[in-house]
Length: 446
Figure 1 (tube, rainbow, N blue to C red):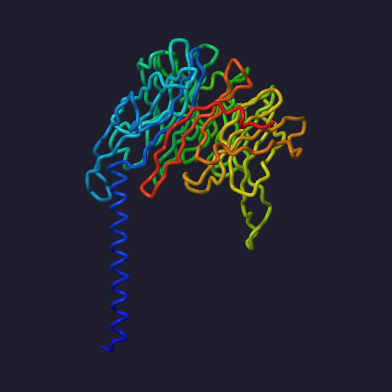
Figure 2: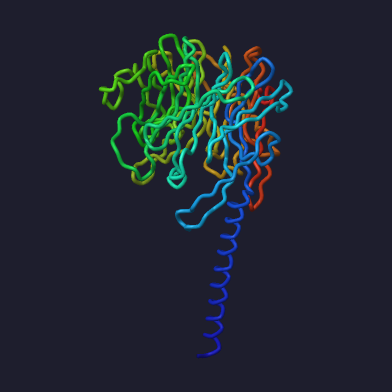
Protein backbone atom coordinates (compact mmCIF):
# COMPACT_ATOMS: atom_id res chain seq x y z
CA UNK A 1 0.00 0.00 0.00
CA UNK A 2 1.46 3.34 -1.04
CA UNK A 3 1.89 6.23 1.38
CA UNK A 4 -0.87 8.33 -0.26
CA UNK A 5 -3.57 5.68 0.31
CA UNK A 6 -2.33 5.07 3.86
CA UNK A 7 -2.60 8.79 4.62
CA UNK A 8 -6.22 8.86 3.34
CA UNK A 9 -7.15 5.85 5.47
CA UNK A 10 -5.65 7.48 8.55
CA UNK A 11 -7.65 10.64 7.90
CA UNK A 12 -10.87 8.64 7.55
CA UNK A 13 -10.15 6.83 10.82
CA UNK A 14 -9.50 10.16 12.59
CA UNK A 15 -12.80 11.57 11.26
CA UNK A 16 -14.72 8.48 12.40
CA UNK A 17 -13.16 8.61 15.86
CA UNK A 18 -14.01 12.31 16.09
CA UNK A 19 -17.65 11.63 15.19
CA UNK A 20 -17.85 8.89 17.85
CA UNK A 21 -16.32 11.20 20.49
CA UNK A 22 -18.76 14.01 19.61
CA UNK A 23 -21.73 11.62 19.82
CA UNK A 24 -20.55 10.39 23.22
CA UNK A 25 -20.22 13.97 24.42
CA UNK A 26 -23.73 14.79 23.23
CA UNK A 27 -25.10 11.68 24.95
CA UNK A 28 -23.27 12.70 28.12
CA UNK A 29 -24.72 16.21 28.02
CA UNK A 30 -28.23 14.83 27.48
CA UNK A 31 -27.76 12.51 30.43
CA UNK A 32 -26.61 15.40 32.62
CA UNK A 33 -29.61 17.48 31.59
CA UNK A 34 -31.99 14.61 32.35
CA UNK A 35 -30.46 13.60 35.65
CA UNK A 36 -29.49 17.00 37.05
CA UNK A 37 -32.31 18.91 35.38
CA UNK A 38 -30.23 21.81 34.12
CA UNK A 39 -33.31 23.06 32.27
CA UNK A 40 -35.58 24.43 34.99
CA UNK A 41 -39.30 24.76 34.32
CA UNK A 42 -41.42 27.56 35.81
CA UNK A 43 -44.37 29.22 34.06
CA UNK A 44 -47.79 30.76 34.70
CA UNK A 45 -50.78 30.09 32.40
CA UNK A 46 -53.77 31.79 34.04
CA UNK A 47 -54.52 34.39 36.72
CA UNK A 48 -57.46 36.01 38.53
CA UNK A 49 -57.58 39.16 40.63
CA UNK A 50 -58.91 38.69 44.17
CA UNK A 51 -59.67 41.18 46.97
CA UNK A 52 -56.15 41.26 48.36
CA UNK A 53 -54.05 40.41 45.33
CA UNK A 54 -53.86 37.74 42.62
CA UNK A 55 -54.02 33.97 42.32
CA UNK A 56 -52.22 32.34 39.39
CA UNK A 57 -51.66 28.78 38.18
CA UNK A 58 -49.03 27.08 36.07
CA UNK A 59 -46.25 24.51 36.29
CA UNK A 60 -42.86 24.39 38.02
CA UNK A 61 -40.13 21.99 39.04
CA UNK A 62 -39.83 24.13 42.22
CA UNK A 63 -36.05 24.24 41.98
CA UNK A 64 -36.06 27.80 43.35
CA UNK A 65 -39.19 27.80 45.51
CA UNK A 66 -39.26 28.87 49.17
CA UNK A 67 -42.61 27.12 49.68
CA UNK A 68 -42.57 23.75 47.85
CA UNK A 69 -39.85 21.10 47.66
CA UNK A 70 -38.91 19.63 44.32
CA UNK A 71 -40.03 16.05 43.74
CA UNK A 72 -37.81 13.33 42.24
CA UNK A 73 -39.10 10.04 40.89
CA UNK A 74 -37.45 7.08 39.19
CA UNK A 75 -38.50 5.84 35.76
CA UNK A 76 -37.27 2.93 33.65
CA UNK A 77 -36.50 4.32 30.21
CA UNK A 78 -38.17 2.03 27.65
CA UNK A 79 -35.46 2.77 25.06
CA UNK A 80 -32.27 2.49 27.13
CA UNK A 81 -33.77 0.10 29.72
CA UNK A 82 -32.01 2.10 32.41
CA UNK A 83 -33.49 3.81 35.45
CA UNK A 84 -33.60 7.61 35.31
CA UNK A 85 -34.03 10.03 38.19
CA UNK A 86 -36.46 12.72 37.02
CA UNK A 87 -37.31 16.00 38.70
CA UNK A 88 -41.08 16.31 38.37
CA UNK A 89 -42.74 19.30 36.74
CA UNK A 90 -45.57 19.95 39.19
CA UNK A 91 -48.81 21.88 38.91
CA UNK A 92 -48.64 25.06 40.99
CA UNK A 93 -51.07 27.59 42.39
CA UNK A 94 -49.62 30.87 43.70
CA UNK A 95 -51.11 33.65 45.84
CA UNK A 96 -49.64 37.16 45.35
CA UNK A 97 -50.35 40.34 47.27
CA UNK A 98 -51.21 43.53 45.39
CA UNK A 99 -47.49 44.28 45.03
CA UNK A 100 -47.11 40.92 43.27
CA UNK A 101 -45.07 39.40 46.10
CA UNK A 102 -45.65 35.69 46.73
CA UNK A 103 -47.65 34.97 49.90
CA UNK A 104 -47.92 31.23 49.40
CA UNK A 105 -47.28 28.62 46.75
CA UNK A 106 -48.93 25.18 46.63
CA UNK A 107 -48.99 22.17 44.33
CA UNK A 108 -51.07 19.13 43.51
CA UNK A 109 -49.22 16.38 45.33
CA UNK A 110 -49.21 13.80 42.57
CA UNK A 111 -46.60 11.10 42.21
CA UNK A 112 -45.38 12.23 38.78
CA UNK A 113 -45.73 15.28 36.48
CA UNK A 114 -48.75 17.60 36.55
CA UNK A 115 -49.75 21.07 35.31
CA UNK A 116 -52.50 23.66 35.81
CA UNK A 117 -53.77 25.71 32.85
CA UNK A 118 -56.87 27.46 34.21
CA UNK A 119 -58.03 29.13 37.44
CA UNK A 120 -61.52 30.13 38.63
CA UNK A 121 -62.36 31.94 41.86
CA UNK A 122 -65.45 30.58 43.63
CA UNK A 123 -67.16 31.71 46.81
CA UNK A 124 -65.16 29.51 49.17
CA UNK A 125 -61.90 29.10 47.28
CA UNK A 126 -60.41 28.39 43.87
CA UNK A 127 -60.86 25.82 41.11
CA UNK A 128 -57.67 24.83 39.26
CA UNK A 129 -57.81 22.70 36.11
CA UNK A 130 -55.10 20.97 34.11
CA UNK A 131 -53.69 17.47 33.72
CA UNK A 132 -51.41 14.95 35.41
CA UNK A 133 -49.66 11.63 34.95
CA UNK A 134 -51.68 9.29 37.12
CA UNK A 135 -49.68 6.10 36.57
CA UNK A 136 -46.21 5.08 35.39
CA UNK A 137 -47.36 3.56 32.12
CA UNK A 138 -48.47 7.02 30.95
CA UNK A 139 -44.88 8.33 31.05
CA UNK A 140 -43.64 6.31 28.06
CA UNK A 141 -46.97 6.75 26.25
CA UNK A 142 -46.78 10.54 26.79
CA UNK A 143 -50.45 10.75 27.82
CA UNK A 144 -52.30 12.20 30.82
CA UNK A 145 -55.58 12.37 32.70
CA UNK A 146 -57.43 15.66 33.06
CA UNK A 147 -57.43 17.14 36.56
CA UNK A 148 -59.78 19.45 38.48
CA UNK A 149 -58.87 20.53 42.03
CA UNK A 150 -60.68 22.71 44.55
CA UNK A 151 -58.60 24.73 47.02
CA UNK A 152 -59.78 26.83 49.96
CA UNK A 153 -58.70 30.46 50.31
CA UNK A 154 -55.47 29.40 52.06
CA UNK A 155 -54.42 26.91 49.38
CA UNK A 156 -55.57 23.72 51.11
CA UNK A 157 -56.96 21.05 48.79
CA UNK A 158 -60.65 20.36 49.49
CA UNK A 159 -61.19 17.79 46.74
CA UNK A 160 -59.76 16.67 43.41
CA UNK A 161 -61.12 14.65 40.51
CA UNK A 162 -59.53 13.07 37.45
CA UNK A 163 -61.26 12.78 34.09
CA UNK A 164 -60.47 10.62 31.07
CA UNK A 165 -62.52 9.65 28.01
CA UNK A 166 -59.77 8.53 25.65
CA UNK A 167 -56.11 7.91 26.47
CA UNK A 168 -54.82 11.52 26.53
CA UNK A 169 -56.99 14.11 28.31
CA UNK A 170 -56.45 17.67 29.57
CA UNK A 171 -58.59 20.52 30.95
CA UNK A 172 -57.70 24.09 29.90
CA UNK A 173 -60.27 26.50 31.31
CA UNK A 174 -63.08 26.70 33.88
CA UNK A 175 -66.02 29.12 34.25
CA UNK A 176 -69.09 29.20 36.51
CA UNK A 177 -72.66 28.75 35.27
CA UNK A 178 -75.74 30.57 36.61
CA UNK A 179 -76.15 27.96 39.38
CA UNK A 180 -72.52 28.17 40.54
CA UNK A 181 -71.66 24.86 38.93
CA UNK A 182 -68.30 24.58 37.18
CA UNK A 183 -68.03 24.30 33.38
CA UNK A 184 -64.68 22.95 32.16
CA UNK A 185 -63.35 22.58 28.62
CA UNK A 186 -60.37 20.71 27.19
CA UNK A 187 -59.33 17.82 25.00
CA UNK A 188 -59.50 14.02 25.07
CA UNK A 189 -57.86 12.15 22.18
CA UNK A 190 -56.14 8.90 21.29
CA UNK A 191 -52.36 8.84 21.49
CA UNK A 192 -50.47 9.08 18.19
CA UNK A 193 -50.38 5.44 17.07
CA UNK A 194 -53.64 4.37 18.71
CA UNK A 195 -56.55 3.57 16.40
CA UNK A 196 -60.27 3.75 17.11
CA UNK A 197 -63.59 5.25 16.12
CA UNK A 198 -64.78 6.55 19.48
CA UNK A 199 -67.41 9.30 19.11
CA UNK A 200 -66.95 10.99 22.51
CA UNK A 201 -63.42 12.35 22.02
CA UNK A 202 -61.94 15.59 20.67
CA UNK A 203 -62.86 18.87 22.32
CA UNK A 204 -64.68 18.18 25.60
CA UNK A 205 -67.00 20.21 27.82
CA UNK A 206 -67.88 18.96 31.33
CA UNK A 207 -70.09 20.31 34.13
CA UNK A 208 -69.33 19.67 37.83
CA UNK A 209 -71.20 20.79 40.92
CA UNK A 210 -69.40 22.55 43.77
CA UNK A 211 -68.54 19.20 45.38
CA UNK A 212 -66.84 17.83 42.27
CA UNK A 213 -69.67 15.57 41.12
CA UNK A 214 -69.92 15.30 37.33
CA UNK A 215 -73.31 16.48 36.06
CA UNK A 216 -72.95 16.61 32.27
CA UNK A 217 -70.51 16.22 29.39
CA UNK A 218 -70.32 16.60 25.62
CA UNK A 219 -67.72 16.82 22.86
CA UNK A 220 -66.89 17.84 19.29
CA UNK A 221 -64.06 17.30 16.81
CA UNK A 222 -63.34 13.56 16.75
CA UNK A 223 -60.76 11.52 18.56
CA UNK A 224 -57.35 12.44 17.07
CA UNK A 225 -57.06 16.23 17.19
CA UNK A 226 -60.30 17.97 18.23
CA UNK A 227 -59.73 20.49 21.00
CA UNK A 228 -61.56 23.24 22.96
CA UNK A 229 -59.30 26.11 24.09
CA UNK A 230 -61.67 28.85 25.30
CA UNK A 231 -65.28 29.32 26.42
CA UNK A 232 -67.71 32.24 26.79
CA UNK A 233 -71.03 32.10 28.64
CA UNK A 234 -73.90 33.67 26.69
CA UNK A 235 -77.57 34.13 27.51
CA UNK A 236 -78.80 30.77 26.21
CA UNK A 237 -75.67 28.61 26.45
CA UNK A 238 -71.94 28.49 25.86
CA UNK A 239 -69.73 29.32 22.89
CA UNK A 240 -66.40 27.49 22.67
CA UNK A 241 -63.52 27.71 20.22
CA UNK A 242 -60.59 25.48 19.31
CA UNK A 243 -59.89 23.14 16.42
CA UNK A 244 -61.61 20.21 14.71
CA UNK A 245 -60.43 16.83 13.40
CA UNK A 246 -58.69 18.47 10.44
CA UNK A 247 -56.84 20.99 12.68
CA UNK A 248 -59.00 23.85 11.36
CA UNK A 249 -60.28 26.56 13.65
CA UNK A 250 -63.79 26.00 15.01
CA UNK A 251 -66.41 27.93 16.96
CA UNK A 252 -69.19 25.81 18.47
CA UNK A 253 -72.31 26.70 20.46
CA UNK A 254 -73.82 24.44 23.12
CA UNK A 255 -77.11 25.03 24.99
CA UNK A 256 -77.20 25.40 28.77
CA UNK A 257 -78.26 21.77 29.00
CA UNK A 258 -75.45 20.33 26.87
CA UNK A 259 -75.30 16.79 28.25
CA UNK A 260 -74.81 14.18 25.50
CA UNK A 261 -77.42 11.43 25.75
CA UNK A 262 -75.88 7.97 26.15
CA UNK A 263 -77.73 6.87 22.99
CA UNK A 264 -76.46 9.86 20.98
CA UNK A 265 -73.78 8.19 18.85
CA UNK A 266 -73.70 10.89 16.18
CA UNK A 267 -70.36 12.34 15.11
CA UNK A 268 -71.79 15.75 16.00
CA UNK A 269 -73.93 15.60 19.13
CA UNK A 270 -77.60 16.51 18.75
CA UNK A 271 -77.05 19.04 21.52
CA UNK A 272 -74.70 21.16 19.37
CA UNK A 273 -76.69 24.28 18.39
CA UNK A 274 -74.33 25.33 15.60
CA UNK A 275 -70.71 24.95 14.57
CA UNK A 276 -68.52 27.04 12.30
CA UNK A 277 -65.27 25.88 10.72
CA UNK A 278 -62.60 28.32 9.56
CA UNK A 279 -60.29 26.38 7.25
CA UNK A 280 -57.59 29.04 6.97
CA UNK A 281 -55.96 28.69 10.39
CA UNK A 282 -52.69 26.91 11.01
CA UNK A 283 -52.86 23.53 12.75
CA UNK A 284 -53.34 25.12 16.19
CA UNK A 285 -56.82 26.36 15.25
CA UNK A 286 -58.29 29.13 17.42
CA UNK A 287 -56.41 29.64 20.69
CA UNK A 288 -58.79 32.08 22.34
CA UNK A 289 -61.64 34.52 21.89
CA UNK A 290 -63.25 37.58 23.41
CA UNK A 291 -66.76 39.06 23.23
CA UNK A 292 -67.82 42.66 22.57
CA UNK A 293 -71.60 43.22 22.62
CA UNK A 294 -73.10 40.66 20.19
CA UNK A 295 -69.82 39.83 18.44
CA UNK A 296 -67.23 37.12 19.03
CA UNK A 297 -63.58 37.57 18.03
CA UNK A 298 -61.61 34.32 17.67
CA UNK A 299 -57.80 34.53 17.47
CA UNK A 300 -54.93 32.45 16.15
CA UNK A 301 -52.71 32.30 13.08
CA UNK A 302 -54.28 32.65 9.60
CA UNK A 303 -53.01 31.83 6.12
CA UNK A 304 -52.34 35.02 4.12
CA UNK A 305 -51.06 33.44 0.88
CA UNK A 306 -52.85 32.69 -2.39
CA UNK A 307 -49.63 31.53 -4.05
CA UNK A 308 -49.65 28.05 -5.60
CA UNK A 309 -46.85 25.56 -6.17
CA UNK A 310 -46.24 23.61 -9.38
CA UNK A 311 -48.90 21.09 -8.43
CA UNK A 312 -51.48 23.80 -7.79
CA UNK A 313 -51.38 23.46 -4.01
CA UNK A 314 -51.42 26.52 -1.77
CA UNK A 315 -48.03 27.63 -0.42
CA UNK A 316 -49.21 28.49 3.06
CA UNK A 317 -47.93 31.55 4.89
CA UNK A 318 -49.36 32.40 8.28
CA UNK A 319 -49.77 35.60 10.27
CA UNK A 320 -51.54 36.51 13.50
CA UNK A 321 -55.23 37.00 12.77
CA UNK A 322 -58.71 37.71 14.14
CA UNK A 323 -61.92 36.15 12.84
CA UNK A 324 -65.23 37.81 13.69
CA UNK A 325 -68.63 36.12 14.15
CA UNK A 326 -71.89 37.39 15.52
CA UNK A 327 -73.52 35.71 18.48
CA UNK A 328 -75.53 33.47 16.12
CA UNK A 329 -72.45 32.16 14.34
CA UNK A 330 -72.56 34.31 11.22
CA UNK A 331 -69.11 35.00 9.76
CA UNK A 332 -68.48 38.76 9.62
CA UNK A 333 -64.88 39.08 8.48
CA UNK A 334 -61.21 38.78 9.39
CA UNK A 335 -58.25 41.01 10.20
CA UNK A 336 -54.61 39.99 9.79
CA UNK A 337 -51.54 41.61 11.30
CA UNK A 338 -49.45 42.58 8.26
CA UNK A 339 -46.02 41.15 9.07
CA UNK A 340 -43.56 38.97 7.16
CA UNK A 341 -42.96 36.37 9.85
CA UNK A 342 -44.96 33.42 11.13
CA UNK A 343 -46.66 34.78 14.23
CA UNK A 344 -49.78 33.91 16.20
CA UNK A 345 -52.22 35.60 18.58
CA UNK A 346 -52.57 33.57 21.78
CA UNK A 347 -54.59 35.69 24.22
CA UNK A 348 -57.07 38.56 23.99
CA UNK A 349 -59.17 40.85 26.19
CA UNK A 350 -61.44 43.69 25.13
CA UNK A 351 -63.39 46.79 26.03
CA UNK A 352 -66.08 48.57 24.03
CA UNK A 353 -63.59 50.16 21.61
CA UNK A 354 -60.56 47.88 21.35
CA UNK A 355 -59.17 44.37 21.41
CA UNK A 356 -55.94 43.96 23.38
CA UNK A 357 -53.92 41.07 21.99
CA UNK A 358 -50.72 39.27 22.81
CA UNK A 359 -48.92 37.01 20.39
CA UNK A 360 -45.72 35.16 19.58
CA UNK A 361 -43.18 35.97 16.89
CA UNK A 362 -41.47 33.11 15.05
CA UNK A 363 -43.75 30.39 16.37
CA UNK A 364 -42.10 27.90 14.00
CA UNK A 365 -38.76 28.31 15.79
CA UNK A 366 -37.48 26.99 19.11
CA UNK A 367 -38.78 28.39 22.40
CA UNK A 368 -35.52 30.23 23.04
CA UNK A 369 -35.91 32.17 19.76
CA UNK A 370 -39.53 33.23 20.27
CA UNK A 371 -40.63 36.64 21.52
CA UNK A 372 -43.96 37.95 22.75
CA UNK A 373 -45.60 41.07 21.39
CA UNK A 374 -48.63 43.14 22.37
CA UNK A 375 -50.86 45.11 20.02
CA UNK A 376 -54.22 46.93 20.05
CA UNK A 377 -56.91 46.36 17.42
CA UNK A 378 -59.35 49.26 17.04
CA UNK A 379 -62.91 48.08 16.50
CA UNK A 380 -65.19 49.53 13.83
CA UNK A 381 -68.14 48.43 11.72
CA UNK A 382 -65.86 47.05 9.00
CA UNK A 383 -63.31 44.62 10.43
CA UNK A 384 -61.46 44.28 7.09
CA UNK A 385 -60.41 47.94 7.09
CA UNK A 386 -56.59 48.12 7.13
CA UNK A 387 -54.38 50.03 9.54
CA UNK A 388 -56.65 49.35 12.50
CA UNK A 389 -53.78 47.74 14.41
CA UNK A 390 -51.63 49.90 16.63
CA UNK A 391 -47.85 49.75 16.59
CA UNK A 392 -46.50 46.42 17.77
CA UNK A 393 -44.74 46.41 21.14
CA UNK A 394 -42.23 43.59 21.61
CA UNK A 395 -42.46 42.62 25.27
CA UNK A 396 -39.15 43.02 27.15
CA UNK A 397 -37.16 42.98 23.93
CA UNK A 398 -33.82 42.51 25.72
CA UNK A 399 -35.04 39.31 27.37
CA UNK A 400 -37.08 36.35 26.17
CA UNK A 401 -40.35 36.91 28.02
CA UNK A 402 -43.17 34.68 26.76
CA UNK A 403 -46.65 35.93 27.65
CA UNK A 404 -49.19 33.15 28.09
CA UNK A 405 -52.16 35.26 29.18
CA UNK A 406 -53.49 38.82 29.39
CA UNK A 407 -55.88 39.57 32.23
CA UNK A 408 -58.00 42.68 32.70
CA UNK A 409 -58.53 43.66 36.31
CA UNK A 410 -62.17 43.51 37.41
CA UNK A 411 -62.15 46.94 39.00
CA UNK A 412 -60.35 48.82 36.23
CA UNK A 413 -60.70 47.96 32.53
CA UNK A 414 -57.64 50.07 31.77
CA UNK A 415 -55.34 47.98 33.97
CA UNK A 416 -53.91 44.82 32.46
CA UNK A 417 -51.78 42.03 33.87
CA UNK A 418 -49.49 39.83 31.76
CA UNK A 419 -48.22 36.45 32.99
CA UNK A 420 -45.91 33.85 31.53
CA UNK A 421 -42.30 32.74 31.67
CA UNK A 422 -38.87 34.29 31.15
CA UNK A 423 -36.42 32.05 29.32
CA UNK A 424 -33.60 34.56 28.96
CA UNK A 425 -31.13 32.48 31.00
CA UNK A 426 -30.17 29.88 28.38
CA UNK A 427 -26.96 28.01 27.63
CA UNK A 428 -25.93 24.91 25.72
CA UNK A 429 -27.00 22.85 28.71
CA UNK A 430 -30.55 24.21 28.85
CA UNK A 431 -32.66 27.15 29.99
CA UNK A 432 -33.63 28.32 33.46
CA UNK A 433 -37.22 29.46 33.07
CA UNK A 434 -38.75 31.81 35.63
CA UNK A 435 -42.42 32.72 35.82
CA UNK A 436 -43.48 36.38 35.93
CA UNK A 437 -46.53 38.49 36.66
CA UNK A 438 -46.41 42.15 35.61
CA UNK A 439 -48.59 45.13 34.90
CA UNK A 440 -48.39 45.60 31.13
CA UNK A 441 -50.60 48.64 30.45
CA UNK A 442 -47.75 50.55 28.86
CA UNK A 443 -47.15 47.80 26.27
CA UNK A 444 -50.45 48.48 24.52
CA UNK A 445 -50.06 51.56 22.34
CA UNK A 446 -53.37 52.96 21.16
